[in-house]
Each structure stands twice: as structure tokens, then as C-alpha cells.
Length: 417
Image (tube, rainbow, N blue to C red):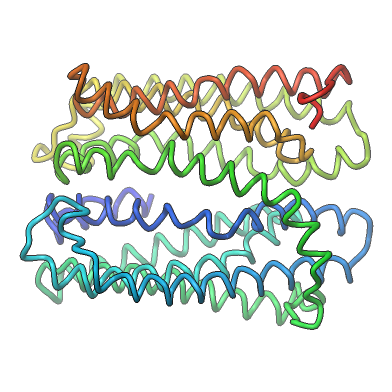
């Protein structure tokens, strides 16, 4: 609820153009999420396996190796980014007014620096999830959204509109919240696996990165497929058009977020069940998830047909989103919901080679396809979303086929790798 309440407050504080710039800026920074080099997902599986086998020392070694490696990568990225920042005109990158040159020059390294800090400290939520304390990540998200809502409300009451002030506060708060959460977790529940440099071992890093390197490429590919839309729309059209697209995404996130809350716990549980060869449980769990897929896909359609009234209630008459944008986002959301359970199982088993190749191929064609459909075929903003849908669709088909093959023990060759 807080994440929805914050949108009209933010638009009111920043106004439409600056809000569009912030959304585009956030998407640009999110591209660098792949610099956790897949270690987050690799840690998730390896930590779960170590706990399932009762090897707490190995679990500590995996945690230490992941923390110190991503920490070193983050420091290197910050130094590199700060150096490059002097030579980049961000107003051209985001297709916005030259008057924002100074503010964006100050804001970008700050936002990027705290983003890199989050790359490290958000690993604690991976540990909780791998240890099947799945509600913890939801609680952190709730606290972040609630705190952000309070901060934006205070900004509207105490200061004039400023993208710089908003961006700094909005970046610093969640990073510091996660730092505090790390401190509490490693002083309490996870004291036994608190990061210690002497437990950093090349062989443990290889164990995580052996699987994590594949996740790394998949992660890069998904960032390109799903997170470049804001930049493409901003460059081809305007920051204001980015706002329409993102507000539609937030509307349909009602369905996808609730589904993710229900589905996320299954990843680590699938890992444990796969290690124990508990096929009966896996089949039953997948049937339950498939029922949820149908339910939340129907919810997406309900949201689509009520979108005009919901948006008017949520944002008022000042913001209009064309039906075709909502339709495209609805289809995209349904595809992601259908894909999620099968990908979670495949990721849990580590048999991700097909997903790797497919994601990489779709990432390579996504940007040129977006430009072609949006500009050459004259579909406008909707064309960018059509491209994303086309790139997600093959994954929906192939992931289900692979799940069926693995669970029936008929997977051979690349289907079993």
C-alpha cells in the first residue's frame, strides 16, 4: 500500500518531467545490478545446500566469499563511476533540460555509490530467503516503502521541488536501513555465519560462481530485456512518456507482487527437495503454484478492465494512461507470472543452460527490436512493450517444457544441464 501511496506524493513533489527523469535514472542505475556477478543467486542455492547438509562452517565460507567479493567489486565500480562522471553530460543521456546539468552531475555518483552499497548489504535478505525465512524480505520491503513514504511526505511539507534532494534522500535511506539489518542479523540469528575474511577461499568462490556465472549472464540479459524500456522510451520520446509506462507497471504490480510473495519461498524449498529427490512434493508444489498462476492472471485482466477507474481514484484526472499501454503491460505481467514458477524450479536445480542461451539471445535482439517496432512500424511507446513481450514469450514455452522433462526424468543433453 505504501508503494502506491508514494506515487502521487512523488509526482506532486517532483512534477511529471522530473518524475520521469527519476524513473529513467533509476532504471539506468539498475543496469548495474548485474555487477553482483551472479553471486547473490549462487549464494542462495549454495547456502541452502550447506544448511540442508548441516555444514554451518561451509555456509559461513560461502557467505564470507560472497560478501567480500561483491564488496571489492562495488568499491572498484564506485571509483570508476566517479572518474567517468566528470566526462558525461547526463542531460543528454536522459534527454532532458540542460538546466539540470549541475544537479544530475552531483546526484548520479551519490545514487550510484549507495546503490553499490546495497549490492553488498542486500545479501542478508538472500541468506534469510535461502534459510526459508521468506517473510523477512517482504518485511524489509515494507519498512523501506513506509520510510520512503514518510520521507517524501516530509519533503512536500518542508522544501521546494528538487530532484537532487529527493534523489539523495531516496537513495541513502534504504541503504542505511539494510546496513542496520545486517548488523542485527549477524549479531543474532546468523552470528555463526558472520562474514570473516579468513573464510574467503577461492574454491568457495568458484563453487558459488560456477553456478553464479550462469546466473550472472541471465541477470544481465533480464536487465536488458526488462530495464532498458525506460531509457529507450525517454530517448525515442520523452521523460513524460516514461511516467505513463511506469505508472501502468505499478498498477499491475498489485498482481505480480502478491504472486511473488507467494512464489518466492518455493525457490529455496525446491533446492532442498531436489537435493533430497522428493519428486512427489515438487509435483504437488508446482500444481499449487499453477493454480495461483491462473488466479493472478485473472486478477490482471480484472485490473485491466477497471484500470480507468482505479487510475482516476489513485492519481486523479491529471494523469492519463492510454488503454493500449495498460493492455501491453497486462500481457507482459501475465507472461512473467506464468514464467516464474518454472524458472524458480529450474534455478533451484541449477539446470539453467537453456535459460542462459535463450535469455542472452533475447537480450541481443530486444533493443533493436524495440526501436524497430516503436519507430519504424510506428507503434510508439507501446512498441517498446511489444518487443519486451516478444522477448519474454520463448522463456514461457521452454521453461515449462524443461520442467516437465526434469520432473519426469526424461531430460537429456542440454535439457538436463
